Amino acid sequence: MTDNDPDLWRDALPRLKPDGSKYDRGHAIVFGGPVHSTGAARMAARAALRIGAGLVSVACSPASLTVYAATLQAVMTKPVKDAGAFAALIADPRINAVLIGPAAGVNSHTRACVLKALEAKKACVLDADALTVFKDDAKALFSAIVSPVVLTPHEGEFARIFWTVGDREADAVRAARSSGAVVLLKGRDTVIAAPDGRVIINRDAPPQLATAGSGDVLAGLITGLLAQGMDAFHAAAAAAWMHAEAARHFGPGLIAEDLETQIPAVLTALAQR
Image (cartoon, rainbow, N blue to C red; front, side, top):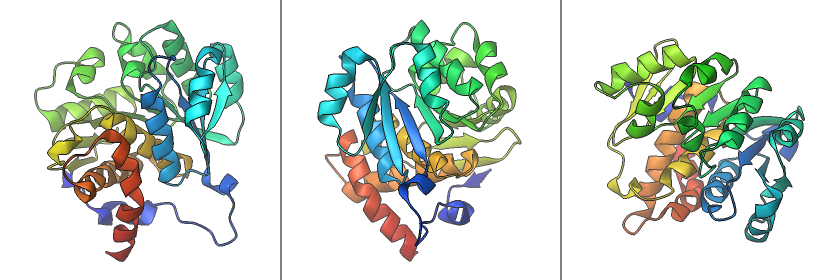
């Protein structure tokens, strides 16, 4: 068990190339929720772009496309009517990271798209509804995990696909081993556990992170790092640290939309450490 510190993952952070292009920095897909709950995916997508992904697109139903397209600028929108269309979209080899879960909807469509993303062997972040849809069949989720995957549950979501949390560190390690994914168990002391038994604890998160949408931004940060080629364990640890630092930079009055705006300052301070 190790406390989270930039020295653990600094060397793994993506670095810009003087002669590089946006295509060198990865293309992340964020699965968009229905028209009445688009905010979570929009915040996650902006966070993925802000942390350095070269391109980010929200894949959403045609019915909600207008909302996403009207409220996003650098983030692109991709209408997908069903799981088959979603699979066809992410089959593009240039798309290398997928986030599913924030306000996605607890339904068969979300479940099907999670399985399509895993079948395509994309690096994935599965959060919130993407975990809850497997409440009664977690084995179906775990057996499909063959690519780099980060699961980002809070304790309630953790209990839906694993068991009730007793010892946070031990339970996260056991869950990572049984699922084959990196498990980021959210809380004041966030536990990041790898299937091989490595554990990093991100301690003493600022209390202002206890606000709606904060976890969606964290999921987006992890996804953006994965898109740039960072390994899942270090991407989760780095994102958790920067997420907390962004809250500290902003201070009182924080809402989730403020978090990604603080990332440039966090990255600048990190480069100067």
